[in-house]
Image (cartoon, rainbow, N blue to C red; front, side):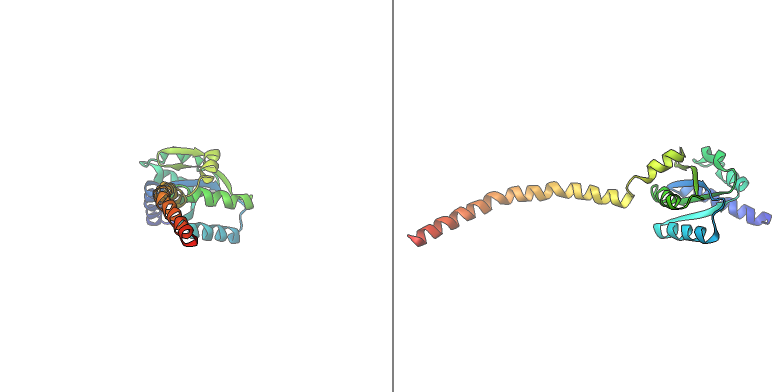
Length: 172
């Protein structure tokens, strides 16, 4: 890599560390090109990105960001996975690591919080932001539906009573 390429890489990574909802750092030693391409495509489909990180440049890029605490994770062959949604990157990495033993999660960061491997695993079990929004919306709509049912119930019961009396009068 030339010096200009290195500067560009550091600047790009610095923006990633500042803007991402979460960043996961993992080892990928022994993973084949096909496995890495599969991993990248799964991450891209979920809305995230995977990059192989040069450790020295990644540590430089971390300086001055909220995620600076995870600089000790960059040892050996490392990759970073990141996404704007804090749940997406950990979820995709952990799902891929279950089927591929070459991907070993080291930790990561979410905002100012530095995460260890266990924290990344627990973060991956949470529902995504869209799922949480859907659940919240469902919880908000449920009481309104019940209120409408309760308000409509007396009127429908009265209508049934009148209909029963009308039938009784017709029969008589």
